[in-house]
Length: 108
Image (cartoon, rainbow, N blue to C red):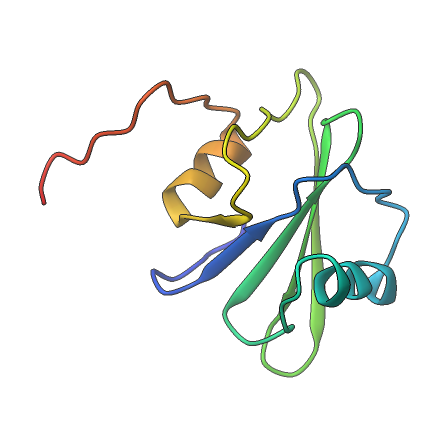
């Protein structure tokens, strides 16, 4: 499993992505579609059309790395919001297949 610190920025591409793409192809989507830079502590998630696979592209300090997950059953939930920036909590819920109806913070 990925370990993300609290200050990590996570972007999820809203359009289905051909996951046969590698470093250059996914990096081009980051710079062209998401208009972001591949930087330290920034993660970019891409989900395929069938929503059963996800690839995470990130810069780990000395180069780019890709992490991939394929679900044995089920699909990743669709995002209701169009904002590609996601919270760390929301990202881990997405990875576990949890679809929250409402999220309330207990403490402010």
